[in-house]
Image (cartoon, rainbow, N blue to C red):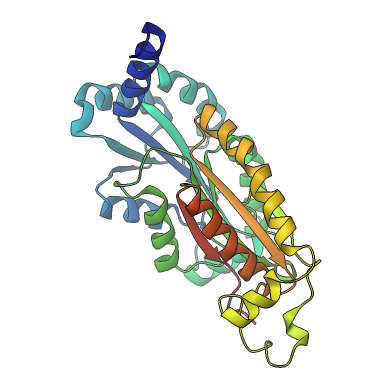
Amino acid sequence: MQDAADSTSDAGDGERQRRPELLIITGMSGAGRSTTGKALEDLGWYVVDNLPPQMLEPLAELAARAGLTIPRLAVVVDVRGRTFFAELTGALAALDTRHVSPRVLFLDATDDVLVRRFESVRRPHPLQGDDRIVDGIARERALTGELRARADVVVDSSSFNVHQLGALVASLFEADRAEDLRVTVMSFGFKYGTPADAEHVADVRFIPNPHWEPELRPLTGQDAPVSEFVLAADGAATFLDRYEAALAPVFDGYRRENKRYATIAFGCTGGKHRSVAMTEELGKRLRRDGVPVRVLHRDLGRE
């Protein structure tokens, strides 16, 4: 039998879960906002592109009145509204009082990738003016830095094509997912750079490198011989045991703070053997613990 406090808490939780969800899609120009919007439309989201900032609150009110007839609403915003980022923090704070659950998805990519994308379509960056593309990118980073820091989800699209980015968005926001913390466990190679979208980064280069074993070199961490070699190395299992235990209170805290997404990255030299094997194993352990997990190998096949 529940006491009154429990009943009140459950009712509050149920009310929040029944709220229409409003997703703000933003980030760097050229990082994939349009692709993300199209992927969400395919999932049944109602997507509004390039909404003026002053329209966010009225739109949220309309969504709240419509209730679950428009349960998932996404708004794409960018620097075409040049005053938007100065106003967005206050607008987001006000949105929660409109009985809508706001989330922010920030799309990012490295400067060199963004430059190549703008050059490939022969279009200027919206903030470059008479200067170079890199100058426009720098101005945009300065504008969006605070928003990136407070985003609920940051996705680095540097290594994705449009199809891969769409698949990632689908895995994060598909409608039949439980309203719980969603974790991405990612492998990467340090020689290709540290992932910009990872909250937690672990270096597994302390494990002997299968690259130096001739029979293992052509294989990957997804192959049983490599996985067994990596997991049997001194310290590997102990590291995973302690890392998994250390994540448990972190995940509990994220849930208390209503943070729905987390990315954990394991790095080795090239992202082919050690980090892949450790990522696969941690993914298995977290699933065993009931955590919704997506496993991603950023640099596998890149060598």
